[in-house]
Image (cartoon, rainbow, N blue to C red; front, side, top):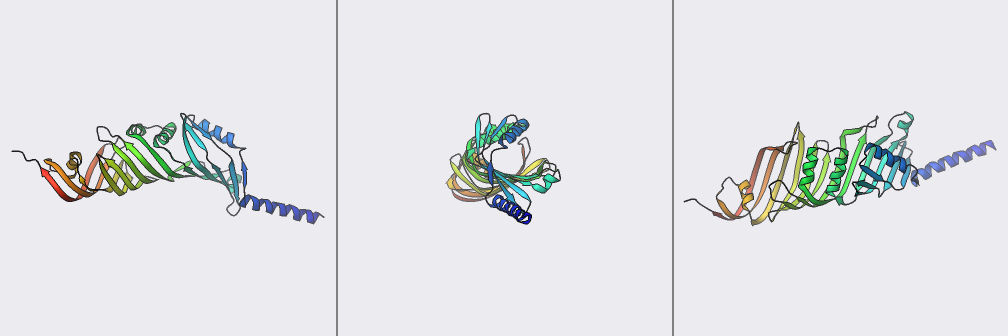
Length: 289
């Protein structure tokens, strides 16, 4: 009788493990504690969680936690997420170590300026203030972020990755023409930013770029990339950059340029280098008598 009872208990235990591993359970029991903890750490940020799904990974001795469609509120502005997920290490818990090893976030389509508000609510800097002034409008979609923690619970500053796609950005630089309809795909990791499939309008011209790379070099950032423009009538503001001659009055051409420059944290630029290939169809010079 006792043996049958033990077999029954073992059977229930294995069945529970199989159920938790395959189906998992859903709960909102810990939502208020998580929301209050975030509020304590970041008073300007409110997080609204929905049901959390718990899945057991018995082979890795981990618990996978996932919640869908949470909302972040910053100054009454909503940032919508598709899901938040993390892994809880069971072994670390029993060793009294920080048990959460990572954090994955997938965002819905949101306004870029709302993301800047979120970052500034955590830690504001003069650079973010300037960036907020430069960006006038635009959306960010398909944003995915991965963060990792060490055994003490501190965020690993050199181990993260952010992927995003920007659409219809409008940038207004100081005393410069407005950049419109900027779209790009971004990958951001430690000390490096890669931009792909870039397109934007400037002074009525459509510019394209396959790749721009921004990497940190000591206290500055090195920007390298390429840019091209199909055949069109080129405004004088752009001709002055492409050519050392300042007496070109009118030109119809296409070009492709490789460029590099350094930029400081105060947005000061230096060591500008441009190598251009120009296909000239028509040009008009204005010669001084």
